[in-house]
Length: 82
Image 1 (cartoon, rainbow, N blue to C red):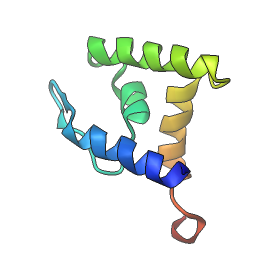
Image 2: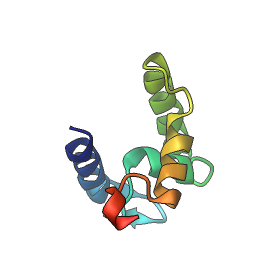
Image 3: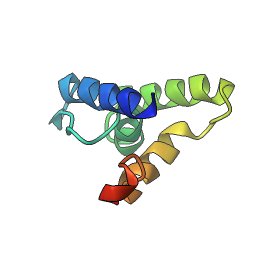
Image 4: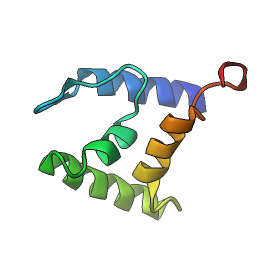
């Protein structure tokens, strides 16, 4: 179920508009985008902290940063595409 969850996350990101940036990129998760925009757009910083709190309860306190690094390293892709 990991791949469908990532696909849904990326789809939602495509429909979310950010001031100064527009709509999200097709291959970026909301969490990675929140980390990337945390200092540029105040509301994304608040969203990043909220996501990290929620995922912190699930054992991933640095979720957004980890997601951003995962995007950079293309770890969300199946091994055949890395």
